[in-house]
Image (cartoon, rainbow, N blue to C red; front, side, top):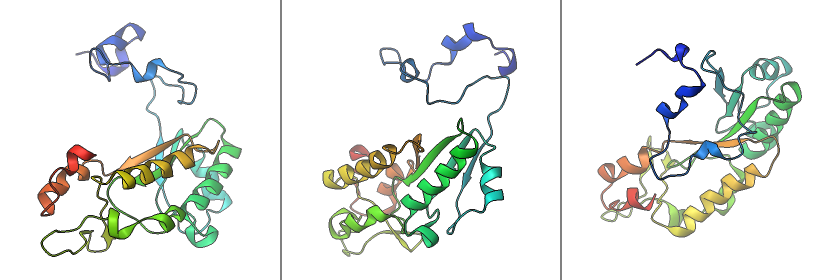
Length: 197
């Protein structure tokens, strides 16, 4: 195998990210993706701050090619993670319009401070141990999602799609996908969860 730095455009076929017979996900409109070259490692940053970023912090963050605005961004100042994320993203893009900004969602852990949580159905959508009827909680604090519930999945997807309606949000960073599979070994009665995800 040749080093990455020696690869040229003709080598792209050797590094497919899709299986034979599947459509190349990068064969579509790639205008929202940052310019790419194996000659330079792309800097990116995951970051969160419960209150507002100051101007110098925004300037530093905007120097990256990709910024993932984590959970809890700006909720103390702006009332919700969604609003705090949108305000930070607008400020970042005002400095660096080519910076790609990602909104953070967790695939399994129900974190607080999101405005969309107001419509979360805790009784129907949170993972329970069927023997005790207790909610399973990550880190002893945060409810776990139950992907076996179609209404929950539709709610979760809508959260992501709602944020993608904003010009300053380029994508969604989905965290903890592995937990959608490992939950079956952690919680009695979670069988079928991985398949539902």
